[in-house]
Length: 140
Image (tube, rainbow, N blue to C red; front, side, top):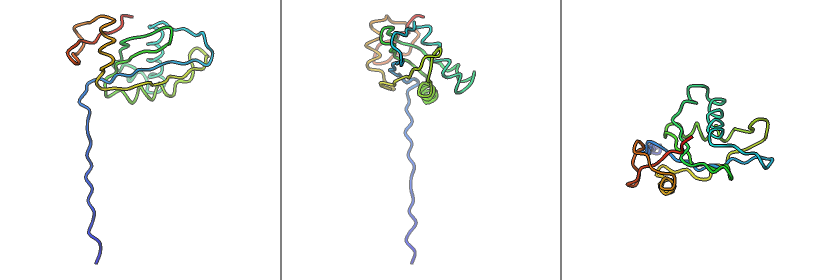
């Protein structure tokens, strides 16, 4: 007699968060390369454009904080664009002919650390409320 058929159930949990927050750091092979916030954002958009084209380069992407000395930032990306941004950053290999790599330090759907940072840079009311506080964008 044949064994009874096994049935499997696929359960998918979807994250209800509209945005994800990435803490990233840009590292260059040669030290001494500096980027301001506008150049940093241009690099992010260029990475998206190179891998996915013009349409996906238009994903809602914000720099919440940027530290010029360490080339590190906290980014806010719509959840549907997280994988595309992460892929773009992973495959980026150079900036203006200089070898570089992005390091993704942390990714969160609920930005407990981003809320604290938002207090330092000021609050803007048009950003969704998280944990009772408004997040703020870095003015470029």
